[in-house]
Image (tube, rainbow, N blue to C red):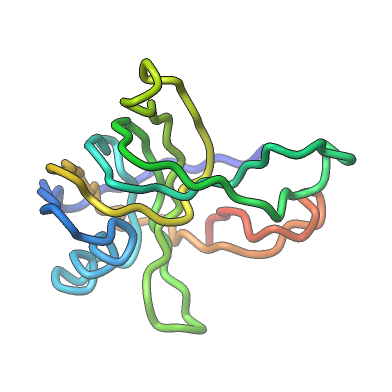
Length: 152
């Protein structure tokens, strides 16, 4: 386990509009306001479609990262996440997990890492800027080489 005390900066309320791509819109708000790192304490909305890491197939190794994804339409849900700056690309990388319910199937629930999403009616997000420590994502051998959040 690692932990660090956060020094926070500005806070932004963001309303994403119908048709907006969620992850690129969060990155665009960060670029517009010079936010390089932070977290999303509020993330809720309705989505025409989402893609999450998941599968309907048998999983042979539950410890290994899952390469598959599930695609859902007509969902509403909530989530949270972090934002870190990637010096290799010069852009921020949002990392968001959500729990969503499919409206047409009694709000049957799905949860996981958000790969993509398109706003249906509205999506509301709060971005809390973190001034320090520095958020970095680096490969973590204990997590099968996945890039995990760390502090500099």
